[in-house]
Amino acid sequence: MKKLLLSILSVVFILQLNAQKVYGTKTGQISFNATGEAVKIIGVNNQVDSKFVESTGQIIFGVLIKAFKFENQLMEDHFNENYMESTKFPKADFKGFITNIKEVNFSKNGDYPIVVEGTLTIHGVGNKTVTKGVISVQNGVPVIKGEFAVSLKQYGIKGSYIGDKIASDASIKLNCKY
Amino acid sequence: MLKKVILPLLIIALVAAGAVYYYVFVYSVQNHRNINDEDAITVIADSLAQHFINDEAIANAKYLNKVLAVKGIVIDTASNQQGKATVTIGNASSMANVFVTLSDRPLAAIKLNDTIRVKGICSGFLSDVVINDATIVE
Image (cartoon, rainbow over all chains, first blue to last red; front, top):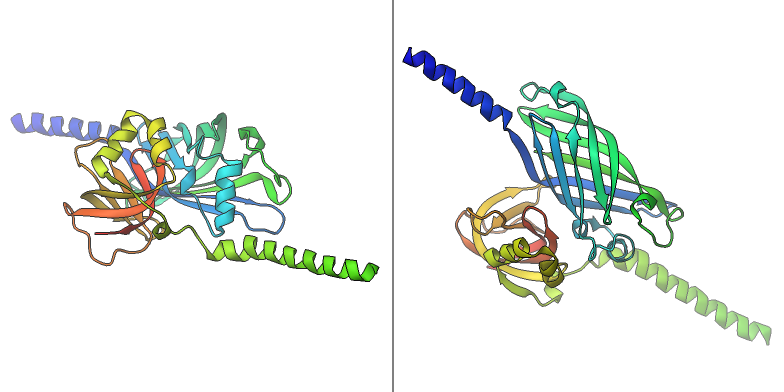
């Protein structure tokens, strides 16, 4: 009887633990590509801070603008000073939900398409956004990958060359291993 | 007469264009910001994290984009998705610490609970204070 009670209790306890499972990383990768005419404009950031809750699909990403690295130092300086104004707005973040998290089986290897909905804040401007991505599960370790376009105008990012040497929509690529 | 004016002007314009091209597309690719050229602000990891917890705006004004020499106890080591070594220094029981990405693999193995000093650029504050392009000083 005691044994039974204990095993029931432990099952309940394990379920509870599962329900609270939070995946996190501080070394996610994100790239920013605004290559317009000819000149390559790509910045990579390897310090993406992200967490998501398995049970609810709630997900957050945090990125520091000054942690984007460009091949060209002058480009990196202009990106920070003239376009992103990263001293005034040091961060970009995303807060939202993976709406179909229930379709992801974290105990089975595979690629699961996901839909992410929430608010993306860049340059101090927040916009509601919906995007698609993929969670790849490999031996219990999830990797979230996604690619989406960000209209610089929608986030109040101004400066010369946009729409010309700089694309008016930047392509953002995300790759976070939790 | 006209040739005498136009030719030198043309040469000057060409040289200027060449210099601009060189600075923008060659020099700026080969010469990145070097932390060794800059004076570092010396700070203890715990108090740096505390500054950011207390008032992020003030801490940003003081530390953002500056070269810092941070001293603290190693509470975690790992490597990022790019294969670069990362070290977390501070206090294991604190809410926020200092998360350091090293610009090259550390020469000596860093052990947990060692006290180290790193020099790098402060990129700001997420769940930890982020230090980038760092090297281990001691």
